[in-house]
Image (cartoon, rainbow, N blue to C red):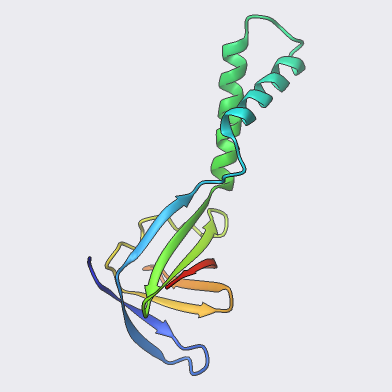
Length: 141
């Protein structure tokens, strides 16, 4: 286990204090409410009906539906970053739209990082000086 140092901003005093953590992890959170194959099937059927119920175009309709559904799913995909501070793991969820160009893995495990906790929000300072704003969805420990 690699330990890294994170800077924690105390909300009351705004003083920085250093805490030991065991790293940051990023991962994609699957949406359990979405059945991808069923969504593609429904969209392929819509395409079939909208195009005049032309027989023999099953593969084309499926390919178009799959492309559309996967593109839409990619746009709405949620991701999370995990930071362990003083023995507590904070899981902060964010979307691509709210990440301002943040790419999972940009902050490597074992890298020092400034973290600010405010209510149900966790702000993680990026190497470019911008903050990744996340919504804390879980506290572990």
